[in-house]
Structure formats: structure tokens, C-alpha cells
Image 1 (cartoon, each protein chain N blue to C red):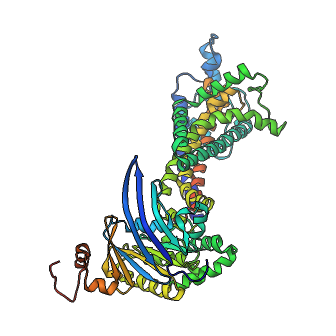
Image 2 (image 1 turned 90 degrees about the vertical axis):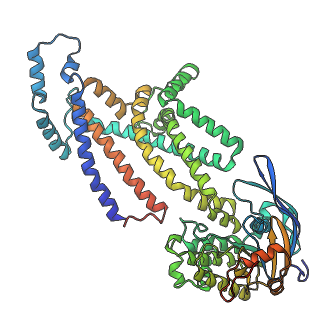
Image 3 (image 1 turned 120 degrees about the vertical axis):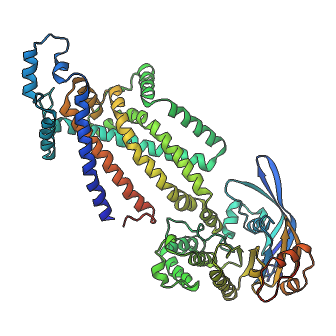
Length: 273
Length: 314
């Protein structure tokens, strides 16, 4: 790779087809989008719109026990991800593209200490010893706002609240300083007050580490103030895209208008959609 | 943790007390007694029978017999065999060692076979899954004494050079001893391995669909790290439970297997003693086996806490 690519992630005509019981069902119908280095991009849509599958396509992660077929092109830093072998893809996952998932209560291994779950990733991608990794793990736990990180690193997931677990998962995802962080509904399972803290944390880390952010949500309220551009997804298609301010001010597509109207507002009375 | 172990150990005392009553009562509820069994078909006068019973203490009220036996047992004396006139402890210990070895070997084999097939079944799916589950159903349907008999027949008819009835004592030839117990242990292990296999398969499938496995994949971890630290570690708890509980099945199964393969273990000793109504021996074996099963359960509980940090007994 020579020079800085204009686009960090360049997706063209992406399709995703599930194969269950022989009957294929297409959930993403050939979508195209770009993410520039360091840029924050939102993907909004209701459940079933294909946004999570799109996110997982970039990681090439199929749900366990299902067979999924990707089509189209996914170029990341000039490299075609869909043509990589599984072994090569494992070097991309976590190291260059990392992901934060929806449900922090279920996303940590219950029988490993949280520290060990960051250690193993550091050992895997940076080749340091477990002992050296632990030093960095403690720094990372401190970075995401865990108090007494050196002590807490030896605690197990069940000793943490939902918000704290999501912080741990964020620490895991940024541990190898990825160029792209995918956050798939990172606050959906959390209390409203905790949601704001987690979003602020993601914003701060993105700024400090210079990562690009792909934020997936069904909630326009989460998008506001977090991202620069938005793609609106509906039934496997991107129906509208643009600068977040423009889109908020003048949504063109009827579905976008409906989604925006679904966000409860305190300052204004309800208006017809 | 230490408190839990002590509490669990203390709880085994009342259980063993109950077991001792049942063992004592059940034996005496069986028709006939040692004296009649020993007389067999020989015509013996009632006077002779009465004298023999008095000598063995069988003429006393049953609660008194129980009291004497319990008192001695608490002092570590499990009585004297009616048949051999030797102390039960001295006769039982070497046999217990043989049975323990057989059960341990069978347990290890069952865990090894069960865990491997269960894991392969859950991970590889497809044809492997199909074959493993088919074999499991077959093995579950066939009792282990039938398998043992088939093994005896197979080796007896086609490989007579491999002596299947030549039990070699450990002290004489350790390797030969293990070799001579291998086939009996295998036939004892098969049924239990099915239970372990099916439970391993279910546990691994359950764990595979958990979010944290997806997270592990998203971290780019190597397949073997995910398998060891994420899948197997989490699937271990249910597998430990069933394996621990199956120990009772192994002990029970060893009675039949030892009889079929003529291994001088506790099982064969029990079998002979029941036919002879040799009460002290039977009671001792029931008590010792129950103690082993109870201790195993405590060990299983300890293993839980070691494997899963969420399990706390405080």
C-alpha cells in the first residue's frame, strides 16, 4: 500500500444471502458505501433492515451454525476482504477492524477474568507475552473509565454492571488500535443514563485513537452529534444517505421521515409524520 | 470454599447412617439366611442351625445386631465374614483396590471417548454428527454386560492368544495388569461414554451460539484459543456434573463386568457374598461404595468452583 487511501473502507454492490434448509434468502441487496479514514458514519434502520448483517460482512462474521454468502466487493485499505482466506481474515479482525456488540451481558466469557480477555487479544495480535500484555490491559481498562483497573482486571464479568461490561468490551475492541471500529447497537441494551456515558466514551476514544467509526443503530437520537454522515437502511437497501445535519433538516425518503418522526422529542409537540 | 467442603463432608454422615440402616435391613429382608445358604441341600437338624445362628449372633433381636455392628463399624471394624471367618476389612481392601482401578480406568476411558466424540459431533456437524449420534443410540440401547459378553466371545473365538480371563495383579506386573483390565474397562466405559458424549455435544452447541464466542471470533483469536478458552471451558461444567454422577453407574456396572471377566474385585466379592447371604461383607461393601459415591459428589462440587468463577459457596 502506497500513500494514504482516499477511502478506508469501500463497499460496492454488497449482497448477503442466508442459506437455511436449502432456501436462500437475500437480506442485503447490493449496497455501496464508503468510510474515510477517521470518519464517523452512522447506519440507521429498523431491525431486519440488514444493517447488522452489513456490519458483520465487513468482519466476515457469519452467525454460528448458519451459512451466509457474501457478494460484491469490500475493499479495506486497498485490500479486497472477500477474497482473503479465513486465516488472513483472522489477522484483520481485531487488529485492523474491531467490533463492539449489542449485548454486554452476554458478550464476555463468564469463566475468564476480564483482564485475561484483553490479554489474549493483545498476545494474539501484538505478539507480546501475557505478562507484558497485562500492563497494557490495565492501561486500557483505565482508559475506558474502570476504577482501580489493576485490581479489577482479575475480576470476572459477573462482578461488573452492564455499563461497566460494555466499557470492558470497548477496551477489548480498541486494544490493538484498529483503524475501523464497528459499533453494532452498542447502547441498545443499556439504561438511558449509561447510554450517554458509553456514547461519550466512544467519541473520546475515536478522537484520541484516530479511528474511523461505523455506528449501527435503530435510534436517530444516538446518531445525532456522533457521526458526520448517515446511511439509512430499509429492507436490505440503502434508501438515503448524506450529511447528518442535512438529513435531519430535510429527509427526502419517506422511510427516513418516518424514522425521524419516531424519535420522541421533549422540546416540540408531536407533529404528524 | 473450605467451609463448604467441611459442611458437605459433615452432611455425608447422616446420609451414610441412613445407608447403613437400609443395607442392614434389606439384607435381612431377603428370604433365607447365611446358615440356610451354607447348609444348602444337606439335611441339617434345627438344633445345629440354631447353634450356628447363636454363634454368629443371628439369634439376637435385629436392632441389637445393628447396634453391635454399627459400634464396631465406627471403630473401623467391619466385622468378620461368615463364610471365610476372616476380617472383612482385610478381605475387602485388596478387592476394593482392583475395583477402584477398573472404575478409574473406565471413567477415564468414558471421559476421553465421550468428550472427543461429543466435541467432534458438535463442531464438525454433518456426517460426523450423524455417525456419532447413531453409534451413541446403538450403545445406549445395548447394556454393557451384553457388550462385555460379545467382547468375551469375539476374543475367545477369534483371538484366543489374547487371554481375556487372565487377570494379572498389579504388584506382579503393572503393565500386564493394566493390559488385562483394558477390555473390561472398555466394556464398562461404553454406556457411560454415551452419556458424556451426548452431554458434551449439547453443552458445546449451547456455548457455540453464545455472544461471547462471536466476540472471540471478532477479536481474531486463533481457532484453538477459542476452542480451549471459550468453548470447552464453558462447556465443562455440565460435563463434569454428568461424569461425576455416572461414577455410581460405573461402580454398579463393575459388579457385572467383574463377574463376566472373572476379575477378583469388589463386584465379584459382592456377588458371591449375596449368594451366600454373608451379611457383614454385603453391609461393608454397600457402606464403602456409598462413601465413595458421596465423596465423588463433594469432589464434583469442588470442581465446579474451580472451573466456574461464578460458583461461590460462601
